[in-house]
Amino acid sequence: MAFEPPQRLVRALGEMPGSAQDADWLERLPRLAEEAMDRRGVVAQRVQAPGGRSSLVVLVRYSDGTPAALKLVPPAARPDLELAALAHWGGFGAVRVLDSRHHEEDGGLLLERLHPEVSLRSLPEAKALLEACGTLRRLWVAPDAGHGWETVGQRTARQAEALRKAPPEVEALASAALALREELTAAPSEELLLHGNFRQGKVLAGERAPWLTVGPDPLVGERAYDLARLVRDRLEDQVASSAGASGARRRVNKLADALDVDRERLRGWTVFRAVESGNRALAAGRRRDAESLLEFAAWL
Image (cartoon, rainbow, N blue to C red):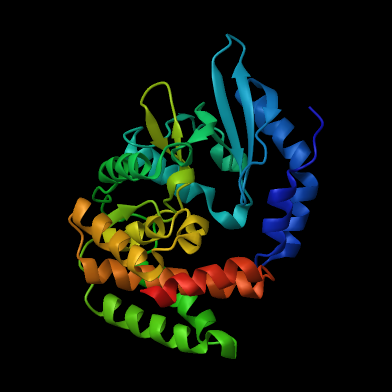
């Protein structure tokens, strides 16, 4: 099947460090996808569009008609860690791995087919948050001894380095975010497997279960870190709302109480993650996104 990589993926990879290596992967991607499908004995139906910002997903079928989804990501994205997380969850709250035999050859993930056009974002906000919380409860489990995932402290240490070099317009918020991170990592409270990038758009409708999460960027640490990304979900609606800062703070408290997470730790991680994302968006030239993220962080 001849295709061009989705433009959303091309743009996103161009913003990331190591873009030269990613450009080479993009150039070879049509051939890589054909070879990955041949190895697994599946045939392509269509490329999922607009697709993700860090992967290509091809909707495929086995010869007997069984649907599946083939996911390919750049090697630097460590698909082996995603596979390990999905295997650890074993389909409980997350998409199920159908075949991992050829993963070491091409990094591909052959997954059960969900409904990519139906995510929690299609639901009213209150219902979406309720289902999101239920999904997170299933994902937060203890990792195996000797696991290979990085910790929240390790990941945020790298992110903190970039924040220390933030431009003057971000400096005040960056300093506040860095101080919060120091306080939070000084006394880590939990060691659980986290999704790492959990939001409503990462939870899709399925046949085996009503809602299953996809696309983890797994790490180990406390629930408040994982929940912090969900706090700012549907950010465009929150920024446009007349509730503003008070609405954002109520959202923190509501989600913290729903999942029995400490409110102040959730607020702290929400600020850090929003500022860190805003700084990256600014560096990538996405000023509108950056301004929304930094405004949201300032509300808290």
